[in-house]
Length: 259
Picture 1 (cartoon, one colour):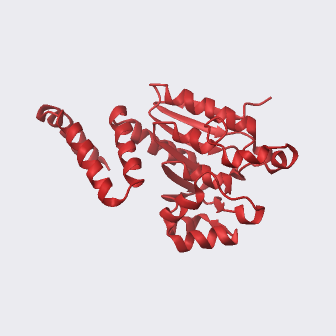
Picture 2 (cartoon, rainbow, N blue to C red; picture 1 turned 90 degrees about the vertical axis):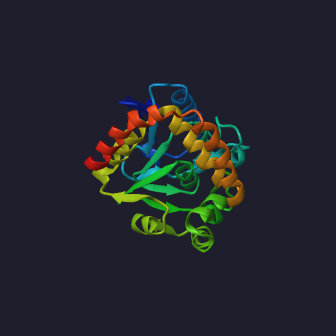
Picture 3 (cartoon, rainbow, N blue to C red; picture 1 turned 180 degrees about the horizontal axis):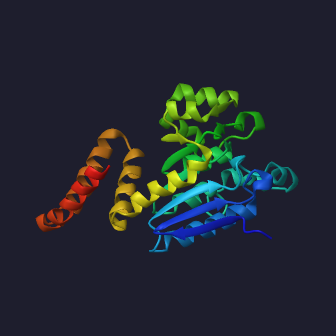
């Protein structure tokens, strides 16, 4: 039996692939458990400094919870409100302290949309489409979509998607600020992996702390977030010496000229 979640490592970047292409990478219980195992492994692996998450094949990033499984197993619907990272794939992604880039290769539907929103950065192929069909299935979102989406694209646009269940194409997703960029399908993984490599070239401890500062601040009112930045920045910067800044200055300048 094929591994439900594939993982490859190269030059500090782990590429994680949801691997049920015959089922549009639907999030079965077994796949969710395996994703938790892989993300936990990555979080504890000092050789990995950034992550790319994608789906196998060209049709789907993931179509969300496996509806066949939900409809055939008593109590399976509880998965929509699971809080443990071994059952909730959003929690499994969030437990990883390293930046996660979502490479959206096809449709990201309902729970799959929620998995995409758990990533730190989204890059989409031209084939990508997003849909929130919770209303049409008759199940309320429990992995964060109802709150995250409105904060990313605005409340009116979020309501349009969630209340209609309509699909959002990649170009519109980029225009609305849901994804950072759209690239041809054959350029998706190279683009995401190059961005991950750029992130991986920075000090890992600093990136981890910076990601946490952004996330923790985003979850607070603006005034509290600014105070949080001041608190953590003051503590961190007090240990930075002029010699350390000078040692990095030439490299920063050279990289700027190259870009």
